[in-house]
Length: 307
Image (cartoon, rainbow, N blue to C red; front, side, top):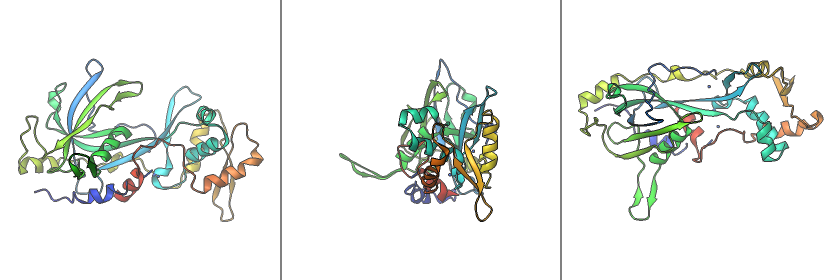
């Protein structure tokens, strides 16, 4: 049997609430569903991490904006790594200063969260050559919410207590039926769902042998190379990049504190710069950022516990 502590995923998922990306980049050996008439349906099996890593997925979080050059640019959201993110802080200040609708119009693009895991393609009628192969799979917050929902314990009025299913487990996991339709920003997977709990199987529902599972485990890709590095204090560099493509738009009044560390105070359109100190103080006191948040609580704590 494959040696992997699948049980600890449950301990980690209990702590999964919202906190922690760069330019758009391609992922090597990525599985991309084949769309036919604007739709796809593929049976996938999420897989555990390789033995050299601690997490079955990585997260990238980015802010996207259309620059003065007419192109879309993607920059790191530094909150993913536990740093202060200037763009999130600026958005927080805007939402404190204006009514919600006006703030939405003024604010910069909220952070988009993407995840990468290993998957086995179980059944793919649109591209049979991919079946039985291991790929890296990039997915968004909608699929992550479905993972959290499947892994969470719940109580059913008829069946009583139902233990959550560890979807990354070879032996006690569940297949992801990935259903998507073309949307404004690519395939929309809102109709995807997890099947019943069962051992990993082939397209004909025959459980894989231990030798076949070992062969899959040996093919797992490292996920860390797909994670954007936000380990250093680079927020001023992020601001430089943002302002470069915003016709020099100044988002912050910059300074230096008593210890020589850089500081920044949000500059909000229509607000007297002399009144932004209070806004800056509220931002420094861990105000919630204006960022994409899932309906499930605890995702960032879970991600932090896996790193």
